[in-house]
Length: 209
Image (tube, rainbow, N blue to C red; front, top):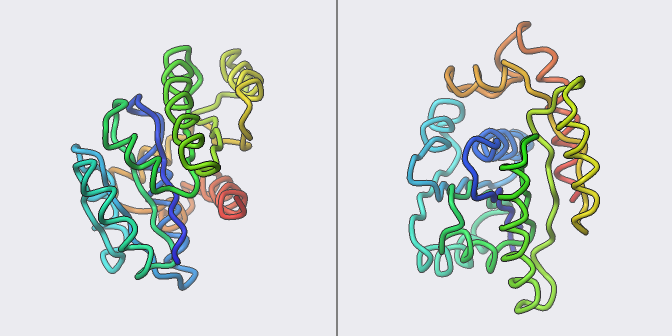
């Protein structure tokens, strides 16, 4: 059976699509059968992955029923299913938590971002109680700035939430440029070397969860 991971956070702009596309692309490049599930009405990851890796299977699921019915079937066909969750704490997000093995929570360095992460953690705890275990929850600090006080506080506060905290990613222009160019950072050339190095290390950590 395939492994299902979802990037969930009610707040937009925290990196769900960036992380979904890069993880799906890396798993596909390593030879796995991968499906990227775009559950966001904006379809950002759909447009991005169509340009970056048109061979990778893309699926749009826009309702809770679709999520609950389709994901178990996809698990029989693919090694990995990567879900790009929607903005807003919608019923689609709640449904995803009932079919996901691991829920990654990207969170930017702001009070609003952390509040949104707290909201989804509450719903995630409910899903864990009902399912008697899964999904595993992992916080991903994103858009970090070395000299920015809130970036340091995010990492510290994250550790008080009772879930594992990953090393996270910095605020680098290459990640925004990747979306505009329809590429993953390791295919962008010399100008994205720092982002490529950081993303490679991050994805190695991610796939071990």
